[in-house]
Image (tube, rainbow, N blue to C red; front, side, top):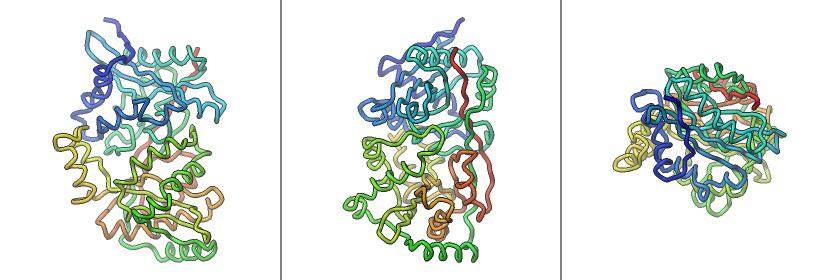
Length: 377
């Protein structure tokens, strides 16, 4: 039978859209499921501030009356204006190993985008850089993270057969937490502190609430990430959303800031215990016991691996070694907390400034993911 693609138009169909990924990967040891409610909020126009500048539709593919694929079609008007593009994004794409299914899903995104004047299709990308992006092309035998996409090896094969080409690659590193910081690393960090008259800052909950540090952190991220592929600056609505979403659950020991003599923020490093195994145990649900697995990983029995969620340095301080100050402070904390490894999460392949910071650590490039693109004809 032919593949039938339907636009999601009801709560029941949205439930099917979200749950399809869980069913497709339920026996896979490397896939990390999202929390259902988090994904539902991401797709909710009233709860996701990205809809201020994004349009989206969601599609389900059926074959022989069975659900066999899903995809989101997204137009980020802000990113298109920033980079002078007319592109529709495909994201949250999953499909069985059937070329008819993947082609039908991509065609649905393409036709929707074409109807809105788009001339290219690119993905996997989310609404913004704060969403998972990039299709895994290397590292299929590595445990995923909560911030990334896992997919089967046949996915990129389908993309290439459909005429898609590489648009951008992200690489990920597994880093060994050293027993102690090398003396050379310490000396360089102390020289940088003195040379630029900088200071390391640790936050308290009171300061976050009273001194607007959440706002300042995401304003810095806007500055630091603005030159990166596909980035669109976060709006105030998005900043408010992320401050409310992330800062309450972060262990502030694992957050380090660098400020100048006037107290202006010049660098930030935010990390947290890996929730990969906890999310697998939760199976995408907070109830009945998913919350316990997550709280245990965060506060009771931490895993041996941590996730480096965000590392940002003010543009005028980049390439001056300022990012080393973050790990000058954080590595002893990681060791004291019992962490053995860190996950860098995705970094653009050409972003050598970021990758250079791992030269002081024992590291392994263990995953690679890709955004694919083709013209719409």
